[in-house]
Image (cartoon, rainbow over all chains, first blue to last red; front, side, top):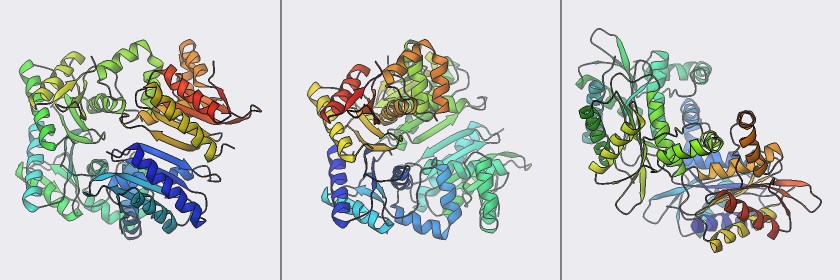
Length: 142
Length: 142
Length: 142
Length: 142
């Protein structure tokens, strides 16, 4: 089970990575393996529903068991499947990079982080930085 | 009307087909002709919402009266129709193979099975194996 | 994590308990600790949405971390809270007995079973019988 | 506009208040004046949908412009109004204490915090402690 301390460590590094890289304001959501929200933060200046995009990257990843970079590829190759999956999982699935599975060092799934606000690649880089800083494994779906 | 005994027979063979074939963990849903769930099972290791994908294959099939292989063809040729139909039926319709109509030997519709977890072709093969083992007819939409 | 073998054992005993007790047709849903469906069965003769009532008992229990007998008491004493919680958790919460938490022998939450079809007390008795037969602990919320 | 720094300060004190008071595990959600999530944290051991209850307290407060203690009184006196309002605002409104409006020293609305996990009174006490520690005004609806 992902602990609050682990989730806070991931979040803190993701935020500092974004700040020192000069990213645009981010929303950052961390879910546990049940898909339940563990921590969330929105930087000042994020748009009204930016958090829902971040949540959709994280939730889509946990729902399908794939980092959202893999969902991105599927959306390009088989858009009808990702559209259907989005409906089937209840609407919260954003198939672009920035949703990263969090695994422990035994490769067990602990949850996922979703970030939105800058480019998808930068969003993902902040997510990966956070996971690694917490001593865990990042699975982007690449 | 699909009986519990028939649905259990279908499910048992679908599970054993998957195990002996070395498939990845599957979610398997069997609905009756009303679209009501009759039996369901998720193997150990399925992702959080894998069951909803399986249910979407089965529900889409019963909803439209077509095996999901036919829905797959429609999704490729007329994506706007499948998108609209997905909304119209309430969101649970996954147009890829693995949703198979269950018919009796007089061709009467008894329900549908939906399987998700391995390739769509393998999902469908497990579904067909289950239906045949129960002495019923499988209609994949091919 | 609740295994498929455990869930099947719970289900099999719940069904046989119902049959030997002469209960009316039941729908039985077993969810894991993530709220994901693990197994489900509807006996012959259940009404169209009986399964959704069973699912609502199980989901409400996992969602709130309480056997549905406790939710029943809350619904009688503070109906506005249970109404609000039902909306907040997405609509699937049925606050009458028959939703029972499944715990292992260390009291760790593994999931929940929800049964509907006979009286709430009989529904709950079948659920408890199933959990005990699987060597696990039943938490009815009493 | 509620800043991330303010929201983090509120959250940190609410968490430490809960820990030093020996409260049961809490979910804590802070929304800004637009109803957008600003920060969130779930302590270890919270049930699957505890976060949705916390969000419902905060969202109900911002939605109606009233601390949830006032909504609680309305739920007891005019339940039909709170039920209708819950539907009207989209389902996320939990009318029990623990949703507290956050105002600045000029009484301008900055957002709301919602806490769930212990008794409603304790949930509210943690919320108020957090707001005061951040140099802001707490409006519980009392």
